[in-house]
Image (cartoon, rainbow, N blue to C red; front, side, top):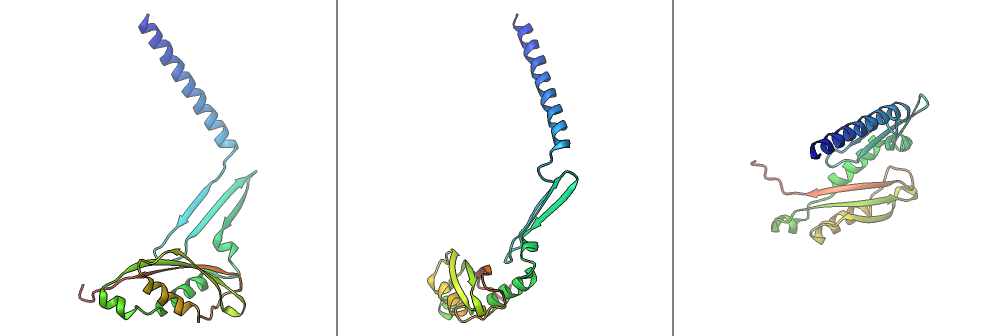
Length: 162
């Protein structure tokens, strides 16, 4: 009796799995929610996200680089690098061996001046936050008004002997 119940449940399980596989194959060929999804992250740069959707044989592609095409992601990357390179390492932090990873979201106003700065990753030491804000408050951005850029900064002491 137990053997017969086991065989019946095994046959039922196989049947249910086959039905689910057939349904999956049928619907995956009819409805494809996405064909392509990619996120590129490079340390110290902006993220790049690209989606590609397919419906009724037509392909629609959306990417953050395309939506910012008038800004140009390369000019934004260049702007971030110029800001990062212009921030001096505070002498007192260097003397005390302090290090931190920080990040800010900056909004550009008209005439390329700073509209708003928001901390998205708090610095471990306030001295790094002050060094960043001293630079960014006097910065002349080469980006359109309303542009928001994320500026990550790693304050690290590099031993030139290594």
